[in-house]
Image 1 (cartoon, rainbow, N blue to C red):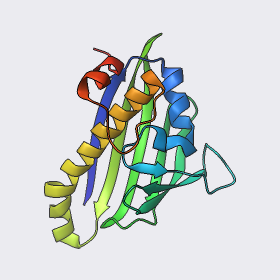
Image 2: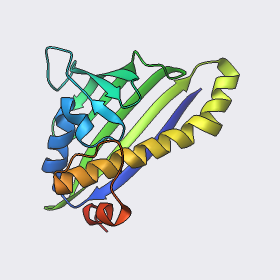
Image 3: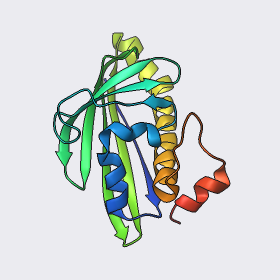
Image 4: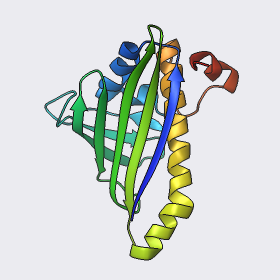
Length: 168
């Protein structure tokens, strides 16, 4: 059974600026909580076929390859070589201009949990809420990094600092 989780955030930066950060495919550690490094391991730095290896602060890692790419609009990655109990995992981002100085970024995750019916139940009851939390942290980190230029690291900044980056 496939599960889908979707979240959006409105950010006080231009769509071009937000896209530039997402398109810096090897720079996800600048805005993603928990990602320590994310070197490119393919010939391409971005676009279809670009692959990065995300290493988390806990020592685990994942490969992410861009499988769909619309310049200045959206990208979708497939996650492989990970220790999560997943058969498949995809994550995508879409950037839409709201005004000259604000945009909306939407993140969508699609995944299938291993273990048949038990996995489907685990996905619905446990992993969907976990993935929703991951999305909220990642999008908050993106907003904060885009607005301030500061790198996130292993924890999000306080709520009052995050609020400045979010469009109301």
